[in-house]
Length: 331
Length: 252
Image (cartoon, rainbow over all chains, first blue to last red; front, side):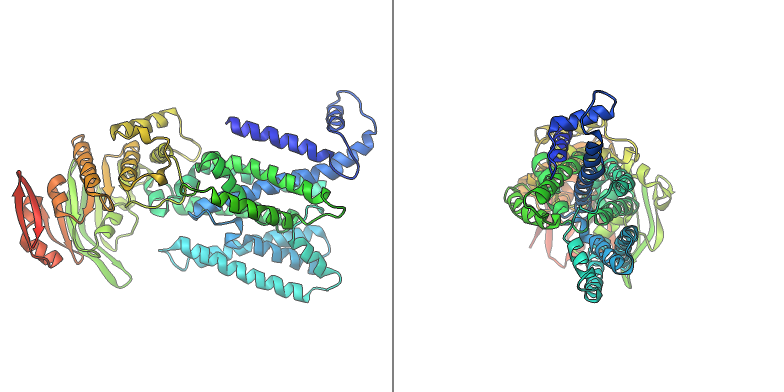
């Protein structure tokens, strides 16, 4: 519990620091003054400019990074436990491929961002339903068939994505698609984040709430059943929630890899395997991690580096290091 | 307690169990013997409701098991699988605490009372010193004891165990069997599969010889474990003799 409080404090500090970063330099005390001013305590210079920079521009992006990092980490923990495999990532059932294809298709067919987002979400969920459908071919080895279904579904939507790229206008649409697939938080605005934060927060809260079932499901179907759990129902519910929140990360910011694989490992390395503890911890570490990475991506160079590139570049060595330190089973 | 009537089970076109009848009473320690692939594990899985029977019926306390709610069934019946490699290194105390799951609704979490019950289960088996160890780093014998502790925390009175001594060394095999003997005195019932006639003599008051999906013989181990049955089931010549008033079965 105190670790969770500690991580929440770190998250708030990193968020305050991130608000101060950017073209227009603000000090942390200026930001705190501004928040006090918003709560009708004290005054602040340049209130309108501050409003614009903090509330309209920087806050949505910071909230977006935290929510995306937390979602990917939580769904990573959930999928790894359900599949009894610590090498699984949130894309296992095809949600990320489906959502990427949906976004790319949306960019060709529509110009409105909202339609692109809707297409992304729909195809992300569709991809998982295809995987679930394939898993029903075999009642005995459902888990293995679910993974195979995910492989098939992922591959299918990756091919569709290639076709979409091939058919896209190479001067206008293709760069947009490619850039999207590298992940970027630049398009997050206040309105989007307010709408999407609700299902994301509800989803994360539900998985935290159901975390005791993740422990049980990780024992395998028969053992889980022998502890009185309705395995199929519980697994379906958790898959749907984890799918929804990971599809929503693509809707917000495109493909951001490795967070869902690396953060659960780091959480387990530090705090053991019990999901009741690990799920909220992973959410917080994921949020902090992606926030820091996004700060780097927008301040390291004059131009912004796509965040997906950084999460892979930083995540992979981190992951290798975590594996090296994994001596006792998996954490 | 359990009554199995004309139980049949087939997997695809293959008949695994071809009409099996038996009864299990409270405080029985019953061993199911038979060659590999004779349907022992299938029979356990049917008793646990993991598999759906093809025909016949299994009654638990007079009710067909398919009509009993999963949660209330598993408040009475605990399952100890063969030793497995868990993917995640949960702490021993967390593994034992999972035994409280059949008493939890979706909205309730483990509380202090549950933790106390889990600790008591560890103490009963004399392994409370393992509580903060990582389950996956334990030896096979210790893991098996942890799983039994989980079953005790489940407060079940019927323990269904699939080859509990599988993978244990000679000493740990008999230590585990002694625990089973000891626990069975407190009105607990054990249903287990076994590959070792000696173990059955040592611990069981009833045995079932299963061969090719049918019961060859059942009853008192001292009566049914004899060279004729061993030869029929395992195609092996053997001699049953006794040392220090204990029967043993030796292959010759």
